[in-house]
Length: 299
Image 1: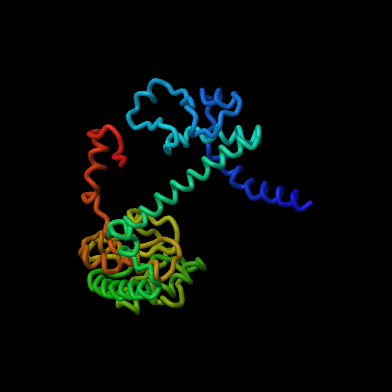
Image 2: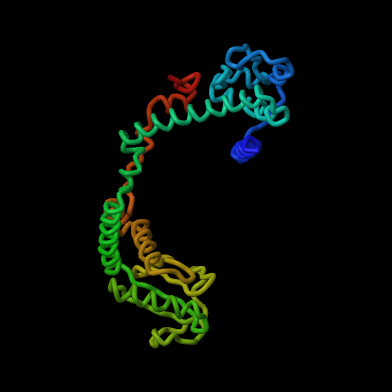
């Protein structure tokens, strides 16, 4: 009874992985199947296994890796081993597949180990350089970005004002009105409020009434918030209701797009550092893309 239970547990533990590979491995018909029809000839790495059939284009592809047990060979053939193990689950068939599976995991572990060493020694790849991994350091970075954003918002408030279009009958407009009012008071934005249905929001008793706003504003829904730089530069911030944080981030983005702040000022408001540069890609990648290398730089 104990043996039956252990066997059943083993089968159940393998089943999710088996089902996963059934879904992701392509089972191609090739000369490899002929090898399976023969009697047992020992472990597959001792035998000269026929390569899968390929068309002329594949055969002429210099990047195709046909050598047994390379990653490309495993990708093209593991489905055959899995199918054989599932259809004819003999000890040899299942063992062959499991050895291939283990080989894949070993390759992945080796890749991950080397990748970790490279990432930690290269600032272009290290996420800790873009944003601190430590919670305490990340909190400091967030605070620095928040303070820089506040400086930019007050600078923008001296350049442009807010224009808030709303409808008094719109409940979302009433909610957004409180957020816009707080934004205006917190950063000293001049605020112009305009009702398009003739009904006023109590927080804005001095609103203008403009039943037909300019078509150039392309207002599709209310409320709608704009930045206006005198005399006639008006830029959309957001249509619909959103949070104060989202509005402040959007205003900073618009300020950068409009040239009101420079790149250095803008970068200080971001919670991540910009370290990536296409010009710093390894030269052998560029050569491969240009077709100057016959194959990827395997070592």
